[in-house]
Image (cartoon, rainbow, N blue to C red):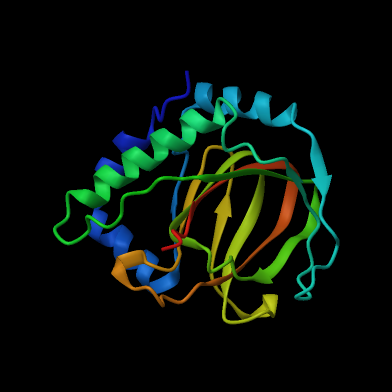
Length: 208
């Protein structure tokens, strides 16, 4: 059973308003070792058994990417239960703040990405406008630097964090703080010591 063994205890020691302020200001927030070791191992073993498809080394937007992505794992266990638990937990934390009831997170786009050791995993880029509210990135193995940038030049890094196994990175998306046109941060992953496996949790934009 996958459980967020350390997440509640760690986040309860932090100021939720500080977290929100950081995400609004810099675009990201990291919770170090948010995932319990047993849970990390369960997810990692399943991630290592997935089939991965290498992405083109450069996409249509000129983004350099040296990584591979597994097939859609949204409905596959243990990732489905994990996505549900993370969504419920974060929704509760945001929901206790007046005016933040809109942050009900149903992570219905779940992907697993694998990076081998390399200088640049993916160069500065923005996530799709079709993914909203909040993006949660959970490191299962390997280490890397994760930076938000002013543009597509990696030298324009504004905020840089080191990610290691068990870390949870939260990144804003359209609709965060109730702002539909919120700036989507350019971000990059580099200086990778791998193999690095990451579970990416996203919320699909509802079509009305």
